[in-house]
Length: 304
Image 1 (spheres, rainbow, N blue to C red):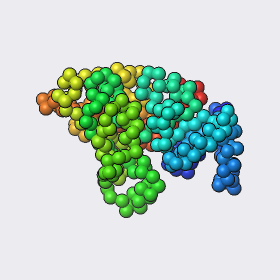
Image 2: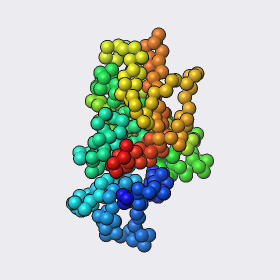
Image 3: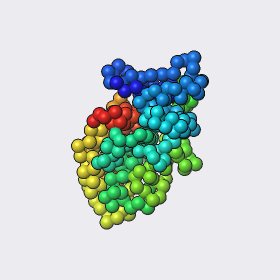
Image 4: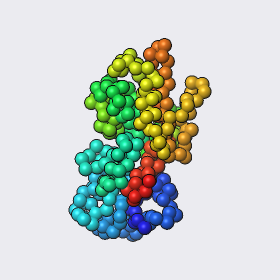
């Protein structure tokens, strides 16, 4: 039985992970006694006594725990970090299992794994195979648009929407420096950071990530079908990523995969205008957060 410590299990991601792991016969979830929660020594003792720690913390706190584990040496647990802190850090394996054929093996062998961001999961899923196939140039000027349910925005945003004091829809991160940009560029294989415009809507969970493309601006001026074929090849046999037939009509529901750990990828195109839009649909709390964390945890514990 693996002993697991979830550091930060009072937040949305930590709570979701705890619920998913509850009752499993192969895992024992351990916690710091309530009366010692603020005792640094208690955390050191617990970290030295577990097999794996899942960090659901602010970035600085996650870095502190990683440093604490450095000091523990051989007694340190393996780490799975759900924060942004280590997604492009040396020595950490990126926890998007579908990134490459050998990515599950890398995650399984890693001492430290960084869980991907929700927006980044959708963007990288669309871009990485097409960049690798030469269908999108590494230095292409790309725009990524995305909308998420409010559950991904933290405690204050959740409270505002559930109290009815938040707007029905809002753009944010208009300083054009969203925290997911470094991992999108690094793990999609881009030499130029894309322009990223995220937004939040008045629904609890669900996500759409969309990337518009001018086909004549792509290397070799491919037909849109080539984009779909490249994505289909990359994800053939994937357990959680699929390319379904596009739905009838010209609309896509952001909430259709709520409660699922799957992600759907689409290529919508108008060949006469030489335009295409790539779209990823996922649950920001599923494949975009806790679902991906449990997938990584299972790989790290020797599962499929």
